[in-house]
Length: 294
Length: 341
Image (cartoon, each protein chain N blue to C red):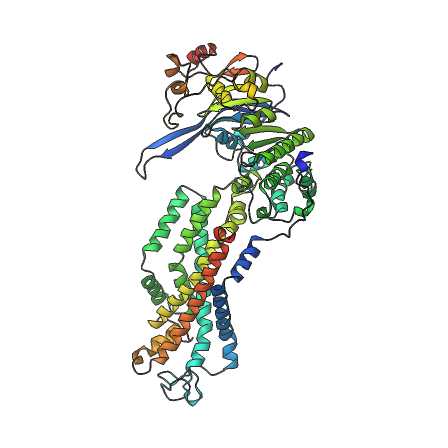
């Protein structure tokens, strides 16, 4: 029988999920691995550091502006004589949590808006895209400051403010991906197989739209950290928690006398955001199907 | 063909139209209507295969999608085993989908790359078979066997299969809900010739084994001649000729069909000289703004005055052979004259 011709002797390959291939691609990318290792170290420091180094970051422990390495203070002390290493370790947790949850929030808003406006044409699309454009033309940092200044400077409010101002990019990416995928034949096939609209959006289109959204979400963790630092620098922060931006903001008047108190948390922000960007770039290469077959 | 045409008709399409509203030239451009499919009717008998052939843009794929209600028809009726599909709501339509499945043209884009082969085949089983009384959903294993895939391939992902194997997965998916009608939209045109033959043989074997009815869309007349019982030729959204395969290939009546058939290259050198090339000049006219009268008039070698003013209707010229042409079927004028629109 001719149509049985593919029953040849070749062995069946192992099933390989597309995500597994992407992961292997990611691990072959040196700069992405460097970023991942850096981020792992920062996360470890954030969660284990305060336990291993239990100095209270709000306590005045020595004379102000003790330079790094002197009197047993590895990173020195700030203008009130508080231990900078303790501030750095405690601040890391806040910075990372705010960055990650703000990015998660904006991905949730952005994917919902983007998927609905990409899938449904007509009124839904027009309305949602006008809303997106409204948020897009707002000056983001200013809008963020207004929200925090009006509704209080708790961490929840800061996360909410950052999430609300930064979802538009995700929405646009999600929309364009959904619009591209919805006209592929496997979406028609899902409809012919009796799938409902919500099943098609959730289980057929969105899993395939995720790669660029994941990349964008990763990069947004970095930009959310920068946002949080900017707000803290301007004093719009929860006074009961330490964050890197807050340390910079508090010490900024003394930058000429003792630059280390500003430089060290600044470097911490820089390294963290760099690590996240490296991971984002690595993910972009790994998830982009056009690069995969090289 | 003998007997009344409606004997055991599985799929009846009546006056089906699909019009797209387009906007030309940006936001403030004028709105125009593209008549992709314009008032076509045909029947497919149970267990037989009807081919729709035509050049790109003739509306054959749109017809297939509209019959399956994967795009909404603008007008007309689609009757499947006596049920009118065109008036069903979403839920009712989903119940009917088990009876009517689709095989897509491109085996690369018609399989969800994130699903394993078995999940792709299982999707219609999960969504559709549960709604049916008989619940004769076959296991994935027997479906794989039926289309010539090995059971140990079921956990693989689409990118691990070749084009022909992917199309087999698509066929298994179409069989999963145990349908009576399968709409094949150019199922082999994306495959190379050796694989085409395998897939066509598979489709024919499945048709015989499972008493399937095919609506077969193709532009390849060789494939059509091999696969089909009846052929409908489409040109710019209209059926111009509808006949049994032998009738159509041996005595094509419409000038467009004649030129289509004469364009098929003959392999046999002794026959090469026999084929009289009836080439037509030019391109199809603008589908958004079709000419008044017959749409083929601008390219037709047999054009008459009436062709430019009145639209011909599909008229029977011999039993089972219908042509829509003033030059061939004189009766079509009378029909046009009596019809109100």
